[in-house]
Amino acid sequence: MIRVLIADDHPLFRVALKDTMSDIEEDFSISEASTFNEAQKLTDDDLDLILLDLSMPGTTGFSGLVTLRTHVPSVPIVIVSASEDIETVRSAAQYGAVGFIPKTAAPEIMKEAISSVLNGGRYWPTEEATQPRPEEDRQRKSEFEDKLGRLTPSELRVLELMSAGMSNKVIAFELNIKESTVKSHVTALLRKLDVFNRTQAVIAAKEMGFKVNP
Image (cartoon, rainbow, N blue to C red):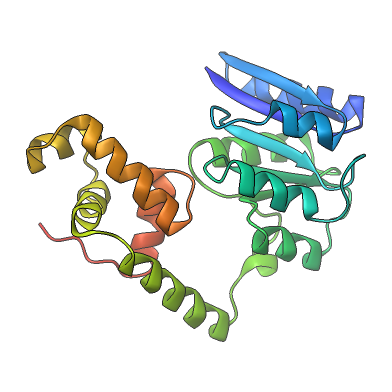
């Protein structure tokens, strides 16, 4: 079952997001919060997605996003907002969101955005908003290399096998270790790489030129 938290103080928009979820997934559970305090109480690591309004009672600006990202770093958060200027979208990405849905977006766009994130991707209304400038791209690669340097040899090997498309069960067989040990390595490397799931880890590794040894 897909578990989603919708944190928005506008009832009609919560309904719109729930309708969108029903078009994407048959087996899902929705929690609703109309204030940020309610959202905090409903937030846990078992959530698959948080849809967070930037402007709601109890939070201002990106403080809510930062707070939830700190509390549940493994749960992807998508910002929904009436403000859709490039700087707002860019800031959402900078503070850890994996997507941004303008409240003016058509239902088809909302569906595309949510589906993308649930499948391990990201969604931004415009590439320009999050397209790294050359100097930013160099810095991003340098930061990712630093994060790779924090991985243990075992975690690096697990990342290599993940990048080769292997499941935890197959990785356990290849490395002659327990599947529970593989899961522990995956959890650790996701945290160290600052990504939310194995798909994002593999995509980031390949984008940064991470070499997969046969």
